[in-house]
Amino acid sequence: MKIALVTGTSTGIGLETAVLAAKAGYEVVATMRNTDKAAALLERLPDADVRQLDVTDPDSVRACVDGVIADHGRLDALINNAGAGHLGTIELESVDDVRDVMEVNFFGVVQVTKAALPHLRAAQGRLITVTSVGGVVGQPFNEAYCAAKFAVEGWMESLAPVVGKLGVAVSVIEPGAVATEFVANVRADRDVEALVAGAGDYQPVINGYLARTQQAFSAAQSARECAETVVGALTAAEPRFRYQSSESAAGFTAVKLADADGSAVLALTASWLGA
Image 1: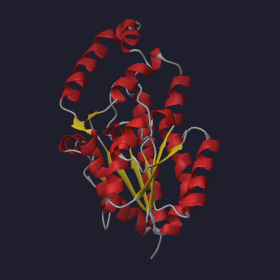
Image 2: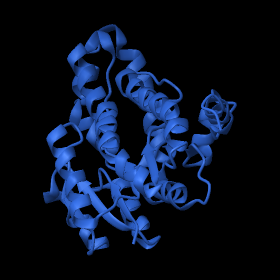
Image 3: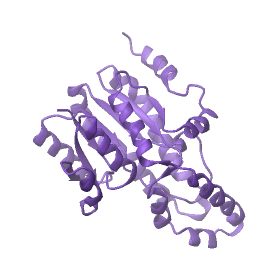
Image 4: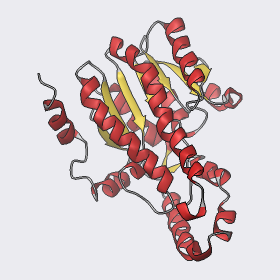
């Protein structure tokens, strides 16, 4: 049986992806930073192999991937889903705040991918990363978050033709608004009321942004719908590089992307590498 490692599976897109990947025939290694939060997943997927993984901790990453190989003997797919939201703007926060966002959302992806790649090459497997429409279009008060997601998209788009020559298919999934605990986690990460109260001259524009965001999330797609896109990329005979998880996400990114599925860019860069 093929083995899929999914990060960030305690809630939301990661949880739903783990469930659907199992239904698609994969044995799922479901990872999360705090395995005390595994109850919701195990209720849906009792046979899941739940493991602790903090994507920001190199020792945790190494131990998790080594453990998967020791116990299962192979790794056919990595689905990078773990991440954290963040609201703020640079005049109102520290550079260390920005570094923290990059550490979770970019370097975490880099660390897990580096550890998994030798095994994905051996299996001729799949590397899938949940990014965001914020990895394509920069959004107000999401400077650090969008910078991290832009970085992930650029890194994966650069990596894709290289490892593609060695048999690993790379895809990114770009959700728009998704009805998960992500927004609640953003609020917990940086109290919105405190942000607004301390915003000074920025207060009118941040209030406008928050009103628009509340409206957008009132029409959000479900985490399961987004996970269906992820697992579609996992099981596709010839996966694309870029997938948007909803019509609204596709429309939003199309404002910036003429090459909506990434095929033209990858065809160009792959041609640089010879036959």
